[in-house]
Image (tube, rainbow, N blue to C red; front, side, top):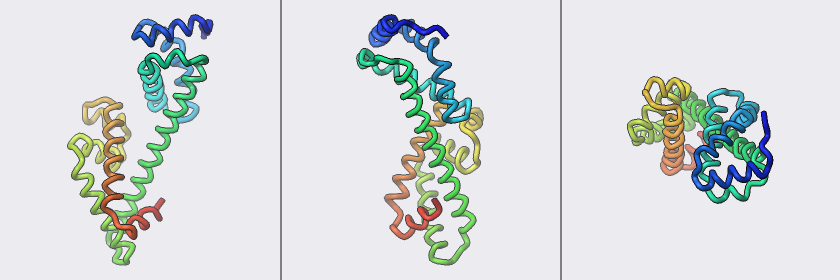
Amino acid sequence: MVIKPLHEEAELLAKIAEGDQLAFKVIYDQYHRQVYNFAFKWIQEKESAQEIVQETMLYLWQLGHKLKDIHNLEAYLKTIAKRKAIDVFRTKVLQEKSVRVLATAYIDGHNDTEEGILMREARNILAEGISQLPAQQQQVYRLCQQQGLKYEEAARQLGISHGTVQTHMKLALKFLRTHVLKNTDVAALLVILKLF
């Protein structure tokens, strides 16, 4: 890989700040592989690492005039990629926890103890929240969370992009978290939290 002299890189960043797509392509071509390798070390998934590259570069493009404050582009891109990787990791952890909660709720669904009753209540509140999601978010949530499909599989099945599936999941999970917290009493919430 050929490293651009700092003054040349600064010129490219200045051009990107003005909306120069060719300058952006030069930076993208120079750094996308490094960002991918860096992200892959964190995430260990090709698809997620590719998404992180796209999101990192999009973030860079959207910085506009703030680009002039960047003095070490490689370090800056790696910092963005690291933050994006952490976000992906957090999302995956939340999704895994949601699946465990749902699985436990369904397994314990016929338990008549107080905990079982609270779990059924929490499951019903979650089902109510799912039914309130917009149709596309509901489809994506059911495919990914309840049927266990990966984002790419759900995207193919629905005929939408991987990024759209990811966006729908983020919005669905955000809504459902808020819905469950708003509609669950403290006792049921404690039962749910015990599962984590």
